[in-house]
Amino acid sequence: MLPRSHCAPIVLFDIDGTVLTFDGPPPGPGRMSLERAMKELHAFERATDGIRVAGGTDRGLARAMLRRASVDDSDHAIERVITCYLGHLERILQTERYRPIGDVALAVRGLERRSAVVGLATGNVRQGARLKLESAGLAATFALDRGGYGCDAEPRAEILRKAVLRCTSAANAGAPVVVVGDTERDVQAGRAIGARVIGVARDEEARRELADAGADAIVEACGEALVHEVFG
Image (cartoon, rainbow, N blue to C red; front, side):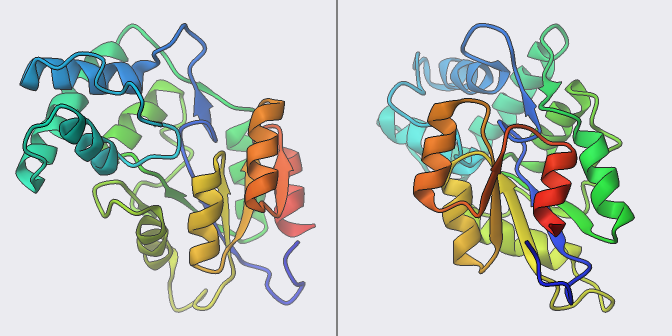
């Protein structure tokens, strides 16, 4: 709960597992696109085996896959993987769709009605974020210019800092920050910038992870309960 004197927080949403998900059999579109990119560029299959994708950043995941394949992991090599990944993601999302987790649009409207500034803080590069949000029917819900992305930095805390900068104006300078995410990495990054963290957990395992990491509150999905946890 925010102190009552702080009436206009900045609320930053993660994307994967927080505002959208994929209901088909694994791998989902994102992981599948990463693996196809590595197969196309480096003839390396099952590139994400042993790599935790949830809570990762696109640049960090690309670097981990390149190292697993024992190939160059320079910035140029990472950019090649990401460009190839985006091409595969766009094609896959023509037939496979993400869906929102809960009523995301209602939650964002509820926050904005109470003067919150809503932004994104995601490990996806900006173009990947756009493709995924469009797939889930959430393109109009979030303004992409208010966000931090995996193309801004590899560490999630740096992505959050960039998102805060893009959501800050003279009118809300010094506003408290609330991070909404689904993994312990979101909690850790939120703590690193002094933010409150609200977890989104769709099962008991995710709830335990978030609780153990120290999330300030946990909800099952985006909706009215999330708005309540932000403002109390």
